Image (tube, rainbow, N blue to C red; front, side, top):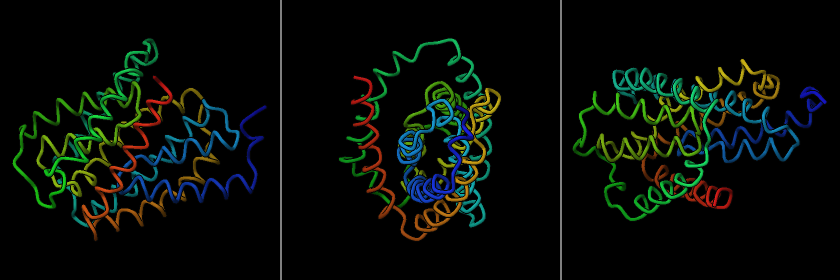
Length: 256
């Protein structure tokens, strides 16, 4: 059975609607894949195709959020460009290693890391601020170190990458949670695009489904990104906690 057997008007409309919601959530707090990927699997799309197609539609949504924030002057262009460069290098290395290495260790460790991020987000007063704080790490050092590190993780494994970006930008770059959420979008986009290229080369992307969902992502990301710019941490922090909590619980359930 080919992936084209799954193409029906009902399927595409359903996934278009799913992608609107996923894009909306992802633009605010990250974690839209928690919605889009299970929906594709539930509707009978083979896992290998679902993973690649999910990268395509997510990349479209993240590109929409990125363009929205950039157009409204909400991003530090130099930081974003430097971060995207080193993230791409890290993602290339991570994807290459993923082809030959086992995910067993990360399967065990990442749920605990996500739990630590969730607990810190819940109880730290620092993450409730709306204004920037003092940087802990110089920006050039941060871009090289965490661009390579989180980019590698994104290419090698992937789940929770958006949360890792937001958390590191908050703690090490002193950003408000609103600014960290916005800045994470182009950085996460870069790692996803690198990974997407490998899925495309392997023939693991259904373009009809990916583009239909991408259209939904554009609408959802547009609405979500404008909500972030208007409401800041009042929207971002609660959703970040909820999405990170769901992601953490799911990882513990699947891997431990």
